[in-house]
Length: 238
Image 1: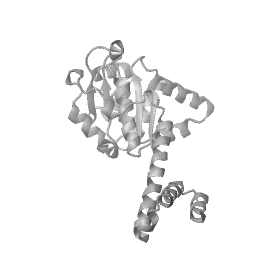
Image 2: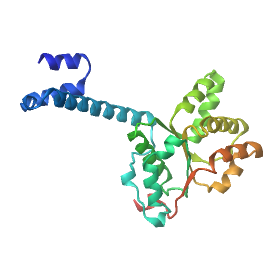
Image 3: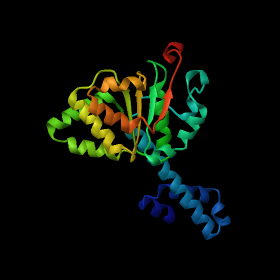
Image 4: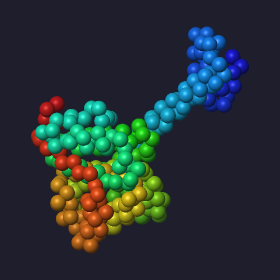
């Protein structure tokens, strides 16, 4: 019991639980020091990884509880299974590449974005999920209360930023500037997923001012993965 108590005092809860099981099953007598230590350390690592994953999921604030395994990859929906398999490996995250998802309302854009975000969390990446209009309202309020630098710094450090519902309204001048700053800070450093009802070809008009639209799209479009969802609304099928 002394070992178990010490492990708990040191907050090594995974090791403490594993040690308790070893004692209850009398398995600790069958292991040498190296084997026992490896088993205990593995249990602690699994415990911490699980807690980190739960924390990453909570902080991400996904719109849907979704996973890659739950995706409907019927080719008629415009989903390339090989592309989803490639994205699920997470290489685009380490390269700071973007994913652009477009499709009609109810086509499953938010679910797909949430599933990719969930996968990123499972791989240990910090993810944040925002409705773009709400995020831009937040940047506006942050300029008023003087916390804009802190907010922009936070956004720049998020390893995967998901911006949903892009293009629902045309952007105002300050919104363009804020979006430009967010994209610029992340360009080739951190990954961004953008989901929109509009095809990418229409994004230029939504952004508005020519110079800013050119700058934003130049940093997003050329090297991004694109997914164009097709078919009728999935909401109608439920």
